[in-house]
Length: 532
Image 1 (cartoon, rainbow, N blue to C red):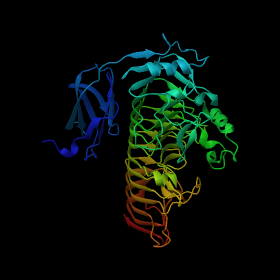
Image 2: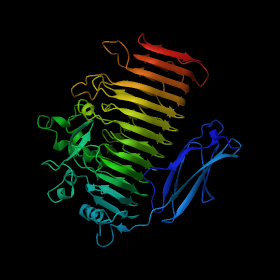
Image 3: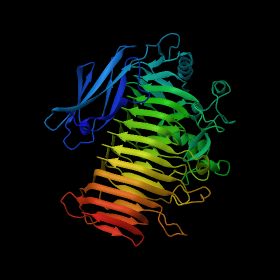
Image 4: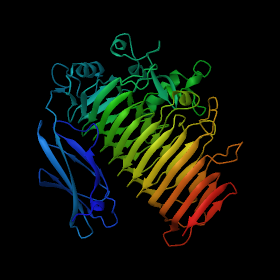
């Protein structure tokens, strides 16, 4: 009889990935994972793939449109014997039309010597429901900002090169009529940056718009960006040019960030606002003018098979869900100029008032190989909850996994669970930067944080838990933290665990790889239980 603990859990189609010729399946490891060797995957009883224990996903391609399929995932034990299986069925979508932007009637310049913004935008407008706008392999297309619409695929098999001129990222009287959102007299769009809603330059690819009277309204849906090619922005040169145009601090105080004028006016590489069912897969994303991929007030995001590069870009975050829900990312690599992943939900006092958390974020089987690492906060005034990080590598980064808030923020970070990961460091603490804005009436809180079966590779304060003390009750707002089976691999003289202003902290089998205990630096305001 099959042991239910050996069957993979929650086998499903990754949200927003079902297409006419492709789909991505995801699952969770079986409960009994200690002797897991991997998985055999079958499609209509034909063997299609062997997956490693951490590879709890598979993309199936070259499927037939409008066809029924059955997928089985079989669990293999240490002897590579089948010990359990789970299955799922689905029917592919009906095939739809494809519009090659280099062919008639669009004739986009495939050499990239002249701008093809208008031609690409017309192809997007013309694309029928379910259709695909294609930049073919070998083509280099130069473009300014493009506005995507619902129910289309934007496929880049060649190179989409973003213009280096700020003027190509504003709305004009000609193009503004095709945009339902708010546009100011300078042609900037209502957006959100570093926690505040304000007018910004457009991004290279844009989806949806911000409806300030109803931020939970869906303004665009069913958008897929895919391909084997590259989407490359104008980079730091474009970002600096955008900043320069709004560098007058007295005239544009809202765009000052960390003392740098104009920093918040920049567009991103990809920007999704109030959009539902987003599928981002396959492409290389590089050289943004600021952040790379930004989701604002979105619902249901699946990102996988993507490489994100933003080294040399000021504030060049990789993947930022912001007051968004049901976000999924896996099988992706990062090498960024700032946070690889940054989960946000607004800044006080606006973030407290809007009060839309980022929630239900699942991150697995990916690598963050540079930059600052992964952050939750510091803009978390609307709250962040239900984040799972599993089978990830966060290495050669400045901070590893960092949960951060400023005392004035308010908001919360809760239910963050990290499993089977390799991290440089793990921190939940206060930061002093990016602290402008009126103070919230309450302190931020961190609650229910776990690290299980993880390896920490850094030196110094590899674990830092430093919360906030309520001035009235003298109690900490950093509570319920549990580290279980955590191994530290770098036993230098400075490697330690630092605890202050935190309560109900449990350290179960947290040791160096040599088996020696880790030095614990604990203040009088920390309450910790250590189990060897």
